[in-house]
Image (cartoon, rainbow, N blue to C red; front, side, top):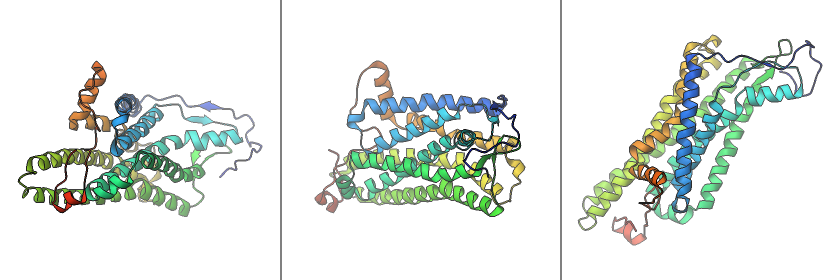
Length: 342
């Protein structure tokens, strides 16, 4: 692996040059996904910003998720790969941080763990509403968002050390020092990008579903609060179903790509898989995740549709959070199994 220090190149005539973009179907689809992702997530950001004074924790996190997906979409816009570069410090920097697509992977990882944070946020809001209302504030949600981005940067940073400029050819290559390093990197990325997020979201969504089922059974026996309780549960269930679909889309889009890459790093799949037709197809499938969430919001959240309409015609037909039911819970209401809307 080349050092970061500037050294004398073995091939003195190497200069900066880039490959010509080959507009195959995968690159065309990638560009379309990027444009749709930019426009869709920008719409979410604008809508949420317009109603920021009424936002609660989930709304703030959804806006952060849209920002991460929008940045991912921007970084998806195809640019030529580095063809040759002189063996210098700045060549190594470009190779390891830009040509390796490190910035895009940071945005993708931030998006993934923001989705995890949304799932955990909904779990505590529904299962422990008293503690949630007491402890969760805008400042703490903002702190969680900053922490998520710092964690995403930390998780992706080891990728810097597996790319380097080849002294002979001047190309930027993925290069492992040993089979053990290749296996360790593959396991590391597979666990952090796929296994951990899916496990956390699976556990929280299962516990949320169990809690909502138990609440629906309790509310069925409450005559005087039946209508309000049923309406509340329906609204909460709709948001949970929407987030569940978002999570399922994430798994469908990213699991094949990450499993295949893990298979390459452990030697189960030959290295020739990289840049093959299957690799391009699974990569395009993964990129679809960055543009799908706004579509889900529009299809499954009537309040979000109303907010888009209000944005277009310049009115505000409904105030309040778009992705969270504002719930006030007291000890007395819990003891009587009643959760009241303000």
